[in-house]
Image (cartoon, rainbow, N blue to C red; front, side, top):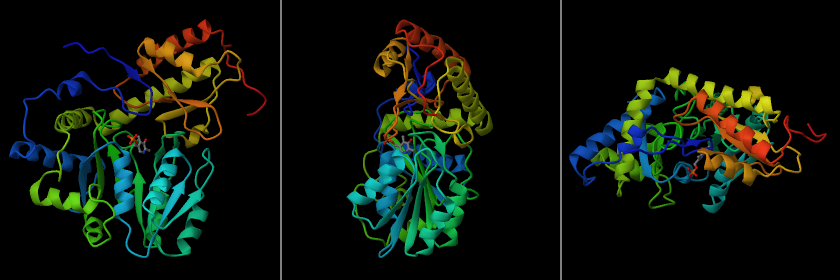
Length: 377
Ligand SMILES: *Cc1c(COP(=O)(O)O)cnc(C)c1O
């Protein structure tokens, strides 16, 4: 079967290989069979291995849902009585974490920073000194802007004050090399459709077994979305508590095989080359980026809309989309931006092909090249 190849430059789901797509076509199976549980066990071990976790100390727990389910679960499951959460908030995804805390009525501090700035470690330490914080929550690659937060330093501070670090690594896992223990992470998370380049529908939390076991005694705030309950079921039976997304799990298994075949370092180099091609293409057209280059994750590039009367993101998007390239609007409060992401099974060559089409779109619409900007920086 031929499937048309599309280049997704949106922040996930990512472009997948045909072999991952085809891995979903399997004989019907009841996921309560030993064969399926055996595959789940291997996947759980591999997900820990990807972040170099000691399997005695760390485990992974899978859930049926998109990435946000992991944010929800970590926040609602890992807070002991009479303690607080500290959300380090410098972007749309941390903002989402703060909203989750609000919806569950969890005691939390929303420590806000500018979206184009790194969080201030001194301010974080001050909040920790005030006491009562048991859980520090930070986003690694803030996908809304592409800023990379210093989770290792944040984790070190958290540990110094007896708190755990929950890091949202949804858009860095499987791309930026992560070492769960050296990076001072107690819990991280991802979703199969981002760095692992598989299908949407299965997400996972990787974390410290001891803390998960402890959390068994914490207040249960959700029935479907509780970390300990799902962990306990997996440990006893090897299965998800409720029906897993069967075909999506087969695709994930294949994607993990391809991850290890490509190799951690090689894969990161490929993403880096893709990102460099994005920077180069933008520079050639005079487009300006939002985040200082040295603070960027190397996976998401946020671009300012030019101050050109002919600029129309929708129309540029549609022109590119019709030719197989998907670009994505920004997620930055008061700035008009769009994003180009270096996720997925794509190469620097795909990016060069994209810029040919993008340039055509600009010409067609009489948008000036190099792009024009007003007086603001
Ligand atoms: C994609 C992503 C999520 C999950 O978003 P969903 O829409 O639920 O898939 C969470 N955090 C970050 C940083 C992400 O990039």
